Image (tube, one colour):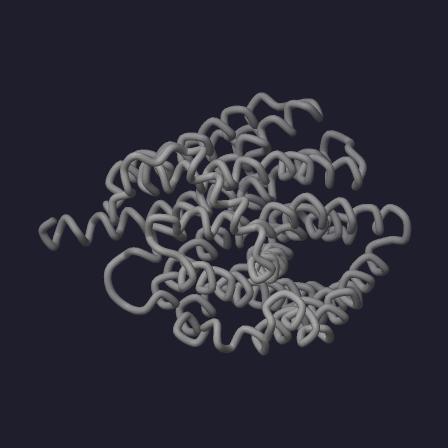
Length: 388
């Protein structure tokens, strides 16, 4: 590969990460608000978000196995096409079932995207593993920030139908750019998807992997809440769609800075202290979210929540990259990243139930206190699960 061609392929890797996350950010804002406009209750809106995530758990493992069988490049190209299909499905979705199907396709795209893009990024040339993953993380969160901002704005200006058409167009452009993705280390020949998938069962038998899953669960809390509970909370506080999108987009500011500036600092040797600080920070920012409805303070809490999640995200990714070979990197990341599938299912349903039963303030405070207790037990969890 000559240098100009190499640079363009690197641009394609980072550029498609940005484009895809713009699309996913738009989905996270538009779908809950669209469901609310159709007259769905808070719990019903939460279930629209949560139930497709349940099916995504199995697809994540399948996506990891397929990525280690056919390569990250091919699977990313499939993922970008799936997002375009999700956009088309949302254009015509008007019922609860149709919304769930459309969001399910988007979640299938997401389950394929994360393991493949992270595995591919960890094998790109130059810098340390943490820095490479930090750069792709910054692209991911930067795209999400734009998508969350644009989602609310275009909903206010164009309406939901035209917003879904715009989403589809962006996904198609992402798929076209995905044709230029870089080639990385070839996967070993002669392995079946079933043989690769069997490695997932072996990995899940290790207690240390389950510690990594709690880290990825914590990393997934900010997007899980900002695509389900926070839009409804802000709407209940009478913020307009455009302001909701802008406030939610602040979630991505912290992870962008974390990815660019702290990638080299996030190493397995510092896992315990990073775990405690990350969990405690998530809890504190959730407590703050329930304390006031002021726009500036709430935006700062959402931004802080995103920064804490970004640190936890990098921690589990570096852990997975350091403990795996390139040939089974996607499976390792799919297994240790299981929390990214569990959280979008469990968190909206649990917090949504608390909102229905006791109101938003109690729901935020109860969740925040729970995370503070998890942080306080850091030494115990590491002793039980990692022997540290």
